Amino acid sequence: MMIKYNDIIIVLFLLFDFDVNEYINIDELVCVMANCIVGFCKMTNQIVPHYSKISAFSKMMFLKTDVESDNQLNVKELLEWTFSN
Image (cartoon, rainbow, N blue to C red; front, side, top):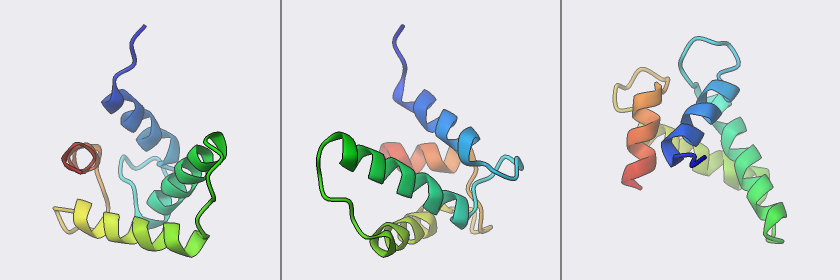
């Protein structure tokens, strides 16, 4: 079975939507990014960046991704950002 990249993004979205409101807020996005980055670094024997760098990157990403400027990301915004960067 072939898993598509956008399916993985949707699963991560659903997994980290802790308040189950169908949106990702900044805290949830920082959690997603921290878990993914740390996991990838450990799997590839890379140095794990300091949490403050992951948090800063996540906040920058959030601002660029939140095209509706409503302080929350829907799955469409996240997919659009993912495939345009």
